[in-house]
Image 1: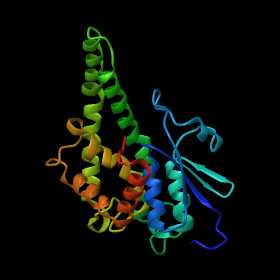
Image 2 (image 1 turned 90 degrees about the vertical axis):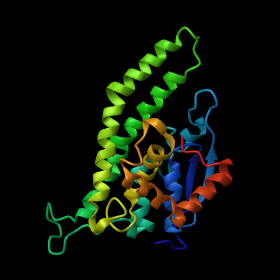
Image 3 (image 1 turned 135 degrees about the vertical axis):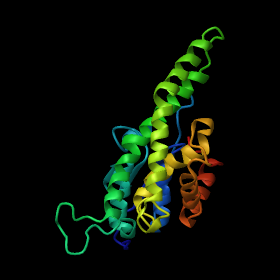
Length: 251
């Protein structure tokens, strides 16, 4: 946990980025930290080049702890949880099965799975959806617009729609079968996996609109989003984002 000799923690904050969930985690574990802000290029939407001085890829989020620079959201969440928020990691072993393959608890295996599923499977779809929308709304001459609309439509109908339906159904079932009845993905306690999943879940339920899940068909997914939004540390993180940016915008 936090002590007086803990190196300074700095969150390198990029507007409209997945750094939001790292800010939430820092609020949840109640560890002192600083925020250094960066802006996107208004034309390219790329991160400010100054971020490359922090990490060679120049992406956000990045957290520095002393001389260590942590990149990639899942690594950051795991590292901060291990050092400052162990309660965000489920118990690993079923009693009597310590160290045995297959001896892990269901809660822990869900935790490890969703830490990777978030970026590996779900966010990749959301990125394609964003690109498809950019194609559809690109400022092209009027006689080109039918072409870009057709391309976007084919991406949605042939790839995004069926895959999103599969993932919406999967998440609804995972929430329905969560240990102890949930309300979180790994059981009745908040974990780092929920923090990882918060960004795509908020995009799906709050931003996507017609392309997103239907509340009547996927009620548990929407209830899960509301549960996360009502956590006090999440609210504090949102308040800090508003103070930084003037508003709370996911993407």
